[in-house]
Image (cartoon, rainbow, N blue to C red; front, top):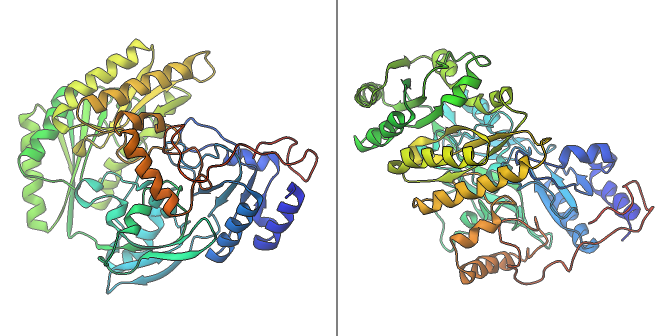
Length: 485
């Protein structure tokens, strides 16, 4: 099928305004929040599951890969069209279809912005728990693909713990449901297998999510430390005291220096680290837990404690954490944000080793992360215009991932594998393990058609893989000549 015919057929499915193919339009879809790049050949914006299914069938007929794409806020290259093809975006599927306050669930389309759902149900005394730092922009479809977490997932769990059912489009264009509107169902948990599959098994077109009641009381405490080691030890001490906060976040000196002049959180720029600790639940219980948290922090060497109990005060304290990544732009034009997990008790030594790795590569690091579950997010700062800088950053990142594994951790906590870390999977899994995982992909008949080049190391394949990149004939249609697809 030539390019002009394909574009014409896609226009017939989604309309002329639902197909993007001009070079200046495609550039917007070349990247996500990672440092990977990949230009799709076409971007198609369906309005329904039926349109998405027709797009998938047409892509199969043309022999082109399909890359599902949410808001492009992911941090591992999951939404990057690594081998070109058709990027299917969900900016036009952003309706909240149903809210059932009695059963505490909602049915939404994949383009619904994470925070918008909580805002829409707040008047019912409900909210949606998973809250990635990009929750003002990221979409629920993307959250499902990456099994996204967030600060409040320490106590409440990640996306898979809050999704009951999915309507999905499979590789042959079939529309089917995995799970439903109840918490448990007989048989294999195909819903759970699909969540976190990073767009490699199919396309999500509807999501049934669990809603929780807003807590009766919430207290947020900012604990200020002169030394990063003291803050790290306080994290383990809090959990060791039997307290499981809703959130337990850490920011280091470099992050604080970036945040202080730009975000109205009033963080002390001279501190070695701060902890942001939130407890919620019943009023009496929350008051006692907050008191215990503050006691532990003082014992660990906190020089200052600030407590916020009203919504405005909590929002001000959280604004620094939510705005931390953006504030790093004051320090360098680029950052590479990593995602590894280590045992909480290993935080002090691992953070010191991260600093040594980055220093050895003549780079700078800012640490802002989910300390409560040991989910590290070292942000390596650099300038991609400097010759060799990107290569040094990637080398440092690989060492940090190896460090996390050697400390008894994992190479991802919530950002996924994507393009970024696919070669690192062999550090954790055997060839047999990886082949069995690929068989799940084949069971969904997705093979290499959906989001090719993601998750699995190069050379690990199963079933019908693409024979190689294809070209449309030169001069056909509106795309630049010779684009690989």
